[in-house]
Image (cartoon, rainbow over all chains, first blue to last red; front, side):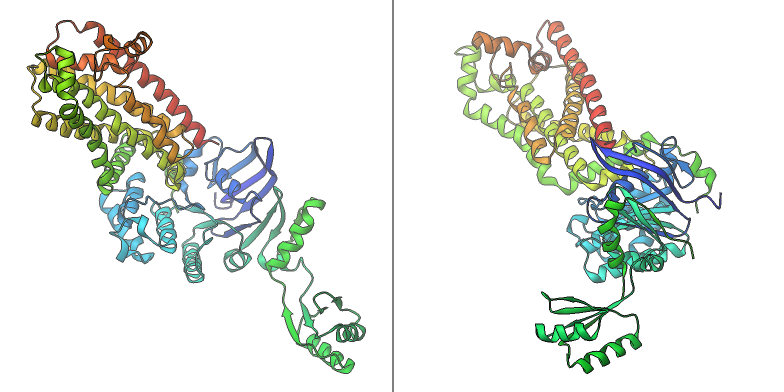
Length: 319
Length: 271
């Protein structure tokens, strides 16, 4: 039981009508970890969440969530999970307190415990002051916090967060990250989808990149970064003469005549120093210099740019 | 972590969950009183309009030169009561459609709760709302001078027929609300329910109508329901025929709408 994955997906297929959305997805999520499903709009991220949270029945696939078979024991799965979808799932006419109390009632918590849990969550999510106001009057960030608090009323062991920070301001986003980290501390498993690579980088133990209905890459954020070539320096010049001189002095560089830039592979300060020395010697002083370390954006672009044609899953070896 | 034995055998609580959903709808009603006021106001406006503007003329037309405003008030009060039922039912279509477009129902569906409780919550809530609306409308009719010699048994019959009609129209509008793709559609499609009493025995007798319309008026569900209510309140001698037709219509509409609603709900929750 302890070694069973919190989520186990094998050969998941799904189509809306004749349009295939998922074309054979395999993934496992270990208990107590954060898994981030990354992908562009329309990649099928939300469909995966809908299927795993019992909202949509998969066309095919062997799926187990929280130790239960999705097809045969959906109610057991529902009892173990909490879902915060992309669209706010709060009742706008009810107050914050009433929304949480509604969840407590539906989880059949004893009255006193329901009240206590409601108070506790209002406090934890910084909603105590707004508790008596209808949720319809809340700001986007407050709604999202209430939404997540409602998901937690039943103390789920596994929570799904579908693009939890889409549309939030940077501060609310950071607050939500802190909350997710705190949840993981208590042993909760988190399955999140996001378009923001930074978010996956910040939160996830494990990342899956979904594109064209398939997982095109899988691994920890650090390992995914090893999939793309190292960092580079981009130097921008005032004119074509300078660019030509610089390109002549640095054969490894790739010039871009339209942008007047030269892109040179470089991974550390020594590389950078050597590059500047060479440019000096050639008399081509750059107007602007940007140092680029690889992030998940690079991974993402590299993978989704090629993946649709190669159609292979690149397995990242475990550390 | 949840104990595995607990999660392995989740028990659904359809009654408790339905009651929770009823409470939710009643809070909505309290939070949004303008809608409730409009729903009750609509039949009252019709009542005032027909009693005071058309009352004297219509009354004379119905009962001959001796008839008047008061006779007509007695004639239309059952109609207005049924329109009150229809008026609240319109709000049910709206509430169901709104629910379906919002994320909250998706949340309910990911929880281990009895699925049908969302719908039964609306139905039971609507029945309570209708009962309140009927009490208010009846009080206004009494204030305007509506009097009846109906005994307790006849009143019991009135309550019974209204209850059957309420359940039928409520399930019907629940289904319409589910069938509507948007809240706007849901607020428009059930409007014909307010028109049907006019195309029946609601405000005039059907024998005053041209043949085609008369045929429709005599065969649509509102006519036997109104005739039964009117007969019970005025002490008409033989009500067997309209009463049987009224009950049959209500049962058929309830059963068909319930099945339709269930199918729509399953389809929308299992896309």
